Amino acid sequence: MCTCKYLIGLLVFTIGCCYVTCRTIYVELNTPTYEEIAFLKKYGYLPEESGEDLDFVYTPQSISEALKKMQAFAGLPATGSLDSETKQLFKKKRCGIKDIENTSSRIRRYVIQQGWNKKHITYKVINGSATLPKDRVEKQVEAGLAIWAPHGGLQFSKVEDGPADIRFSFGRQDHGDG
Image 1 (cartoon, helix red, strand yellow):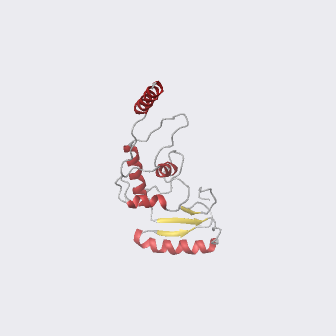
Image 2: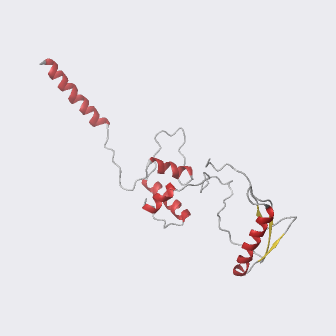
Image 3: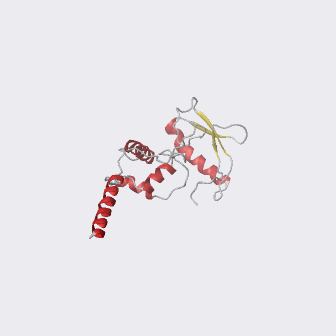
């Protein structure tokens, strides 16, 4: 009988401890998974937590803002919601370079500039790629610029030496995709 009272008391104590120390965890609809949060961090949409910050938490607002940035970058409506189109973005194969770089020293590839203050633009092809020789690159660039020129009111000229307004170059860099 004493053992039974002891076990019941121990059970009540254990349940009480669990109730006090544990809190209910629930997942709201459209909450990003751990993998989706990792994706948002990897590609620069969410800041990386520092190693010293053990209880780092992303707020719903910061996640929504990150989703809006990612959606805008991908050309989707920037709703901040985790809809089916946005979920598809997480599944697409891509290189490992961040879309958004948080350092000011990074040259951004997709910054829209105000344009040139001249109509005659020079260009230079520095080299070819691993699969496309320089002369083929030059022909493709020339064809593309010939299409663009009349619509922008621009004239493009290739230069061999000296500075150029546009320089085409292929290089190697680790993109984090294998």
